[in-house]
Amino acid sequence: MIKEAGEVFNVKKNKTMIAVFLTPAILMFVLVFLYPIFRTILMSFFKIEGITDSMTKWQFTGLANYSKLAGTSLFRISMWNLFRIWLIGGLIVMSLALLFAVIITSGIRFKSFFRAMIYLPNVVSAVALATMWLQYVYSPKFGLLKNVFSSIGLTYLSKVQWLDNDHKFMALLIAYCFGMVGYHMLIFASGIERIGEDYYEAATLDGANKINQFRYITFPLLKGVFKTNITMWSVTSVGFFVWSQLFSTVTADTQTITPMVYMYMMIFGAGNSMTERNAGLGASIGVLLSICVVAVFLICNKLIKDDDLEF
Image (cartoon, rainbow, N blue to C red; front, side):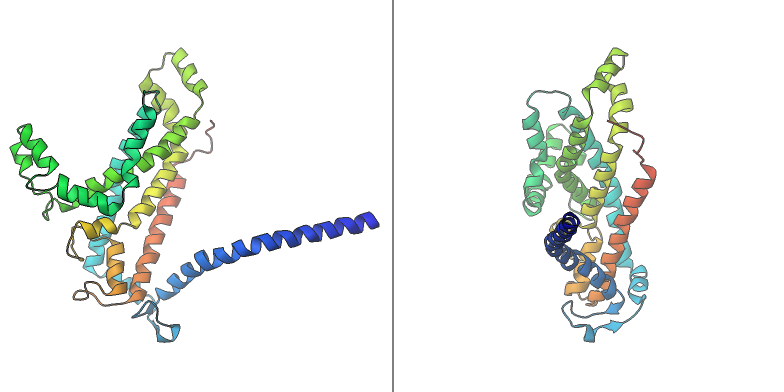
């Protein structure tokens, strides 16, 4: 009886200790993560002039915010820009990141140096990086592209105004992709390094060349890494804001505006000559962007299956 009573006491003591240690983490999770999510979803059904207004000042509008966004041409343009950044930029970044990751992990000399150099743009702030592209790469007077194209005789390309309305979006996209390749390269490289050398040794003995080894070993075993990279790329693309602001002096520039910029306009009243100030409408944008990320994640899980693969 004494032994059983001691065991019961120890179980209760363990439960108490677990509760003591878990309670702060749960409270932080609720306050920092769950509460903002629920509040944002709730705000999306109201018209709110100031983001700090008390709930007594909120005006219930139902789904009016969402229908208004669907009927606003500027918001549709921002979503189209975001889709192009996600799709075209994603293809560029993922292709280059995978290529560099394969090269870096192929046993080349000075591996650490090249890895650091490719990742370096991620260390530099977006403001400094965008300024470099604007002032020293795309400059129509002394820019790097102008000098390079002039030196190799491509006069037409040297005269291209990269920052005009016809080329601004692509210039923005190229500059952004340049800064993102290194981050995704490291994720791909970590996945490749997890693949055992036995696979490649067996493939070499069977006469497989490097291309076939990549096709039948490396690429299939990177399916899970692809899902991670696509999800992370979707998250960063949805949060596209600073680059849009730096590449345009006009807040509502149709060539650079993204949903995050439109949200900023709605919540803080920027560009109020074209839009009204409505934090509830901004919350609706946040909800829609979150749904987009979740949809991409679910589609990736559905299309890219790696359950049957083993390292």
